[in-house]
View 1 (tube, rainbow, N blue to C red):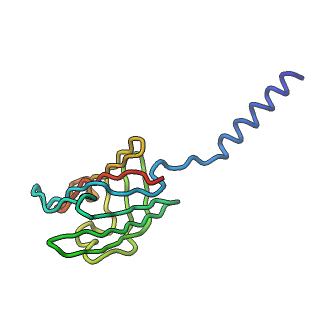
View 2 (view 1 turned 120 degrees about the vertical axis):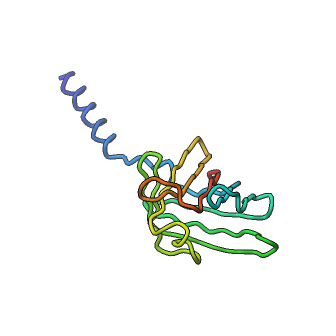
View 3 (view 1 turned 180 degrees about the horizontal axis):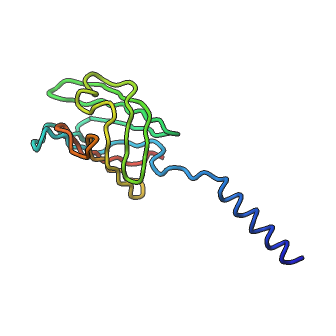
Length: 147
């Protein structure tokens, strides 16, 4: 009888463990704190919250949205982008559904990135093309998780 009860408890524990879906560590709201944007090897633009720039990126159940505002050459610029995403290990692919002007021209329809998540910090690098080569316009973005 003791064996039966022990086996029953183990079976229930295993069943419940497989039934729970673990949240992807990427899911949630992230605020960009710093970014550098390059054309080939030349730095084109730096993003910093200290300069009044902001961007939030939200990942949830396979979808993402990003909105931003930056001050560039004294002008305020707003933008946004959204679509689906797939995360496999540290490789992130975004499938762009809607975007600010010229996003697909710069990133392609399926930009790929490398992401590193360390605690509440996300570093996103890319985009890369289908063959894993850096696209001529690329960036390094650093985000912190919003609570």
